[in-house]
Length: 61
View 1: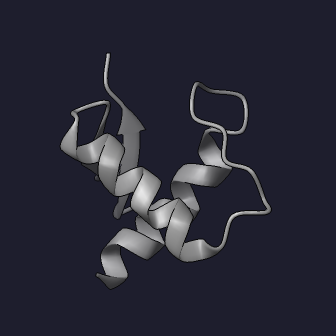
View 2: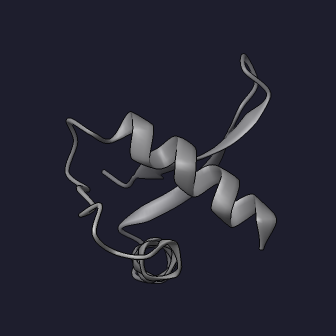
């Protein structure tokens, strides 16, 4: 589950101008559930970035 939290935090930083916007008033657990829901519905996916050697959650096209 730690990789989900780490990827989620990077995802939020990357998506401030993108489709996914999270309200800061939600607790972390709620925001993680939102990301997991988007992953299940294939609206987002987890990808590995070889340049930075990190896992990231990105919007599906």
